[in-house]
Structure formats: structure tokens, C-alpha cells
Image (cartoon, rainbow, N blue to C red; front, side, top):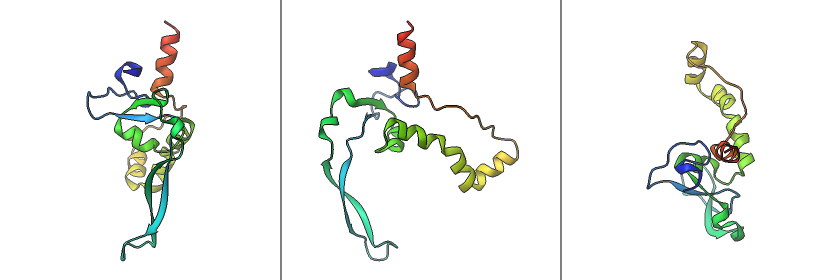
Length: 130
């Protein structure tokens, strides 16, 4: 398996079963807006049609092994889009989570400002230096 059997993004060890094959460049699936069920609080919801918008990207060269949480977080983001979203997580937690703010206020958290470097980037650099 690519990247030493680890998630291409966070680097966690992948199990034999249950890991995801992530499209590095997203294939993006088409969707349609349909009426939401009465009483749901919204008028319409998006429903996937199953149609792949970029079938040329559905290729082995465009697949990375990923843990489920990383693949679900990445969704239709590009690698750079995912990196940008991850960099926003501390501020989002601070803005929306009283638990985060309380833990931070009592010194239980130490925020480290550093670039997001994915496992595949570290792995490829290590392989080049061997």
C-alpha cells in the first residue's frame, strides 16, 4: 500500500479493512435540489444523482489511501483546500465551542501555529532523501 500503509493525510496506521480510497483531485458528483420533507425546517435539500463530473479523475494514479475521518473531512476539497480548512479549525473551535474556550482559559490547551504538512508530503520527502 502507498505511504507505508498509513493515511496519506494524517499518517495514522490504516487497518486491513475499513480504510478509504480518496480521490486526490476530487471527481465531484452532480446533485439536484429536491423538496425537503414537510416539517424539516428547510424547503430544499441537495441529493446526489450519482453522476461523476470528472470521470477522467477516477484513476488509480489519483487515489490515495485515507482513514475514514480524513476522507470524510476532505470531501470535495482539493489537497490545498483541505489544508486551508484544517488551518481554520482552531479559530472555529474557539469561536463556536465553550468547551474549547474553557479548556484554553484554564491552560489545558496549547495552540501551536505551524504549517499543515500531510503524511504523503513527509513520506515522499523521506523517500527522496534515502
